[in-house]
Length: 261
Image 1 (cartoon, rainbow, N blue to C red):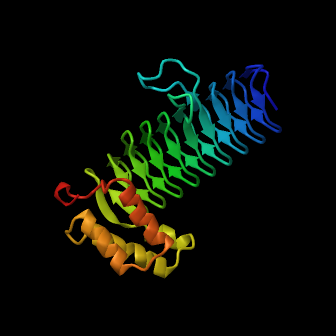
Image 2: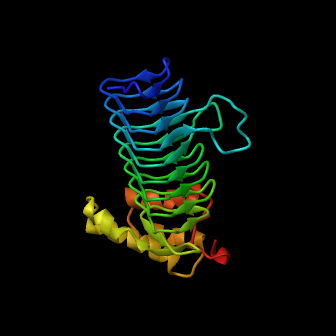
Image 3: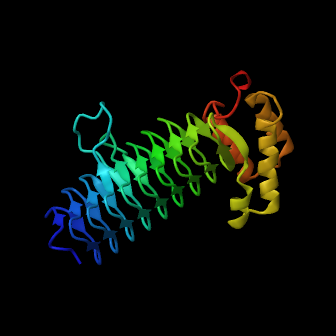
């Protein structure tokens, strides 16, 4: 299952039923789990730990050296979960620190020519459209979609079940369940259609809508909006996810006018 025309370092740990096509490159200090497929001209670089059932398409580079002047050649890591599709010419940099590293969860779809910077963490069931750019030390929550050409600046964080429209630039923190669009980034409503298709009840979606009316459409400060959310929306996991995200990020949220922060 490993082509003699590929390069596989003798120290690499390769699982069962792995297919490595001609001209693929597997570096030293690499682990690839069972039932993965590495297509021609794809590279898996040292420090990469890949789970099971992943497919890496032509020209992708997994675990590339980090593009950060703070990295001085230390051994660092890139962790890839299970059941991921990584399309053509994707670049995923490994971390700049000996602990932690870049992390891709399970069941992600990363479209062609996307770039994920050092030490970023992408949770499971996430979709990154063509040409998505994620800088270093970013976080993307589960079941989130970044449409083609979206860009996350360094240390930005996106919550769960978010939709970021194509070409949108994010500098800051995007709370869960919302749709963000345009440049500069603007609140575009809640992610109701996708949530409804994946098991959220009408009551839960209504709680999300009420919460974000207070935050984005009432003209009050973020502090006052949180007070209103807690008074108006019954306690639930939905409410907690919204309120906790905002508080844990010091109430610094994208698309809020500066005078209302």
